[in-house]
Image 1 (tube, rainbow, N blue to C red):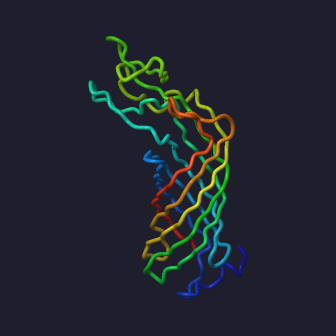
Image 2: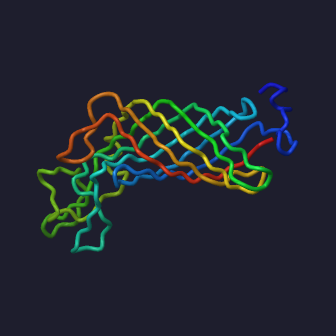
Length: 233
């Protein structure tokens, strides 16, 4: 950062403008009723009084909008998503920016900013494993096969890490647009959230997440994210 920017004065309170900041966020996203979650990290460095560049990482799972959880009525085991063939978690390192649209007055009010980011998307696609009951034998972990497994012999879902050795990496692109709100009354803190849209495009053949449903290459969700962070001067 240039000396001029580092020494630029905040027009409202006379203090030097911050040089950098960082935030950690918990992300919840929705796609026609199906909800996913994940986390995000932003590292921002000031370009000028209103704008900063961002280096970010966003990691969330992606769910099919028709997924629904059911439980085996004959056991107390955890539920499973009937018909789910694959589990998809996307990792997105990105570059972007954040522009202040409304700057809060000192120690009161809400600071509102517009955010954007783009970058590659690395999808971890793994088969779903379920706990299967066969006659009087102990429960077995088996890869879900809709021609063999049904509500009569499925007991519950297996540990997530079952099938991880069979996972495939799918590569694509990612874009994120949002509005950021900082409610913190302390000058050095960031406490708030953001809302917006995230879109992944995955190259290659369409990804089939749910049995009897067409595969997709484009996955778009609305998201709500809660952030905590620190401003550095």
